[in-house]
Length: 142
Image (cartoon, rainbow, N blue to C red; front, side):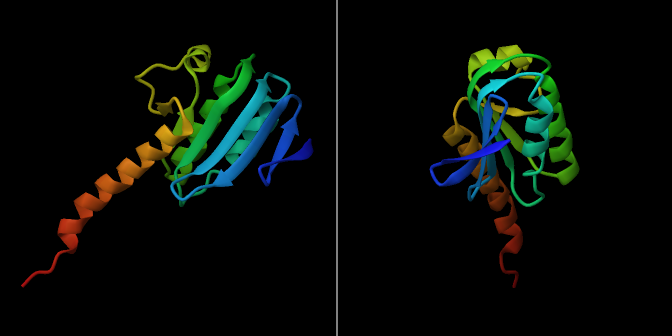
């Protein structure tokens, strides 16, 4: 695994896939670009899973992936299990072709977004809804 730099953030090269992680205000984002295949799937899964923390939602950004081969659904299963264990929401950013290749449907529990801003807006809306529910409870009583 070699390290390269992308916009100041280290990107790790895992046998044809480049992975980079960054912490945003609304979520931790792990982006993958290049090719995902059986040879790099375990390393990708381990790398992505280590950034799932209990304090922020998680976004797995596969929008830069050019090729999905092998059982890539195991990556999503591992991320889902880790997010459930940590008690955080997560979202997947992927194009329609990747969603189809992964066998995902609208019935799956993961939020599927077509872009990173859409995924982050989803979490912003969720936070806003929670705040609106809590504000009346925090009001003053006579």
